[in-house]
Image (cartoon, rainbow, N blue to C red; front, side, top):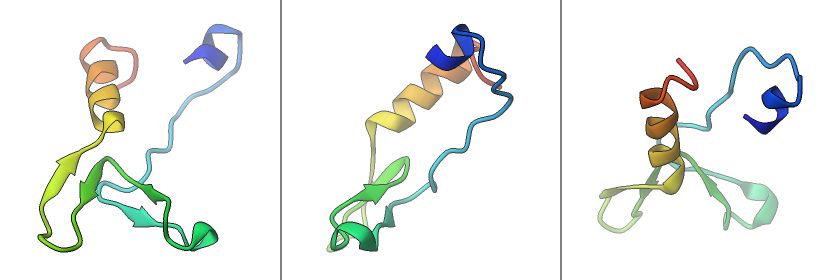
Length: 63
């Protein structure tokens, strides 16, 4: 959003996967996604990024 405010011609945003995507680059410690998946119980927990995306959509910042 900051880059767009500064004049960048950004017409899209690539969101990470819906549920955790593990990264092998850091011994699978980094997990990217909108939901955290507990690998023991398989329960899903919303991440901060999900709430950020929801807020942006509700405010009409992104569609």
